[in-house]
Length: 199
Image (cartoon, rainbow, N blue to C red; front, side, top):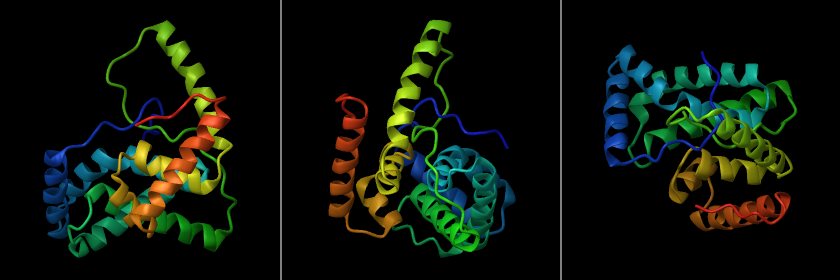
């Protein structure tokens, strides 16, 4: 499995993407392995980025991703459609990660970046160098944040979840997500020397 790209946020999703995901998940519930593969291709990079935020270890994160997709295969019929398919998969992944961390008592380590997704176009050499330098500054600032701040930034900016879906994944009210996000953005801005993080 290729490693996730951490160069930019995941592409903005729309209602058609969610309808396609729901249809794929129904096919998975009916035993369609190709549909599971399609869901994997659509969401693996974003889900893996969220797991790496929780776990920090690339090899273990990939194992947890595989466990997550197995859980999706087994539990597809239980999806109620209350949340987005992506947030449902991320919630499964974070439960898998927490279970694995509890069992193995692995230390939680910061990830390289909250940002993930595929690059839209190949930038030129100068843009690549500048992008890497900017990404290094952002990654260092993110590493300095608390795990809770990294998690909420990862869900809202990295996985492009709505506040309601992030609240469902975290098991907290939407107001709590809003306050955690505001605190995380402020902490990230301080860590980056006052450069803001907008949405």
